[in-house]
Length: 541
Image (cartoon, rainbow, N blue to C red; front, top):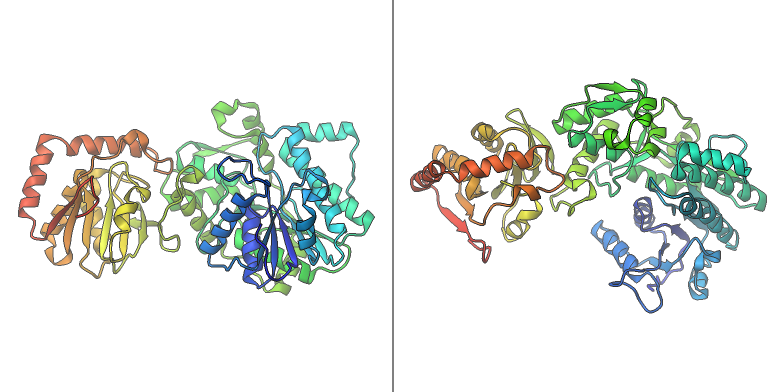
């Protein structure tokens, strides 16, 4: 294991999870010596003789460094919340002797869990963390993260009578029921044994307020995926359905500030942005941003619950979150003001998050290597277009063609010496439209460009680039044509716009016709700018 020189004063349980890594990032950024727990490895490629979780620790450190934080003040220890004392070795437990703030973010967040698994992780595990924290000689506060639809009972009860627990699991499903029971168990037990406790109940946690980076694709993200893929003709709920959101970086800053500001035995904070629009308005906002049709109407949640899941595409456990309820955020708002925290503008946050979900293929593909601060959707000649890179002063303009995306061109772009502007052609990748719009679209794309870039494209989509170069030789530095066979449309990555595979196939077939080949040869022969070819064998021009 890796040990920091300064003993850690904060411990994050569940540090490799979605919330945990962002909190570790925030604590280290504040100069707080921090310890992180990781689950023991079971994968053959990372298992060590002692089962110490080295592989997961290394992944966390790489992620932290990629986000600009020095990971040297971080201590990592392997822990298991299903075992007494967190399953820590005596040596690791001794390393944590100076810990004063314990953040428990460890939980199983998944729908479709069986009851035993959910209860073990989210109830028994929460109590294990509490009892371990109670034994810290310098403990200042235990911060337990729960959820915004739990912990609203003024007088929590633990344990519930078996019949009531059974009814709760039957009504809510394993995940939400176990979170409610875990929240009550921690609050009751902490009060009884005298542990200073704060429960933080965040709403749907979405992407970073600047980059949109998410890393979690359940819950509301699943709904946005249905919207993007054209599988959301009707929206469950009413005009007042409220699914509030909070930016991951705001929540991380809030969690880090809790031990500094909360005093006394027990505090509870519900953290969400009350400016979140009602769900129909939220979905309409993102449909407009992504350039996809918004749902045509609404359907009652009760009806969706009775319909087959194969028909609705909705996980029954997610339907309990589709409520008109509003939530008391007064205590969280007071702490945020005291800590100088403010929610980012929610509409822009939602747009950046949705863009990043699409760029990351909703978690199913390789994360897009595009610059997240500049990549996104923009209107080009009235076509909703996915762009990334340098938009005004590129040295190269990469026109991604049939069946390709950012990752496909990685080997090419990494060899280029100048900034790149990359865009999916109309009807391909993540861009709307049809091939018939190529000419107008390309002219509009290049209109703001102030340099003379080289246009890079595939042979099957080279004709629009060649026509532009012929019409505007003073605005183009050259053409670079990739001669490798086009990607199979059937292998179109999951983040591509609905219908992209069909349109890609049509585009490839049209480009391979004898008439189209002859036209491209004529264009290349008359093109006044230099033309180079990139072959499939060596990737060089």
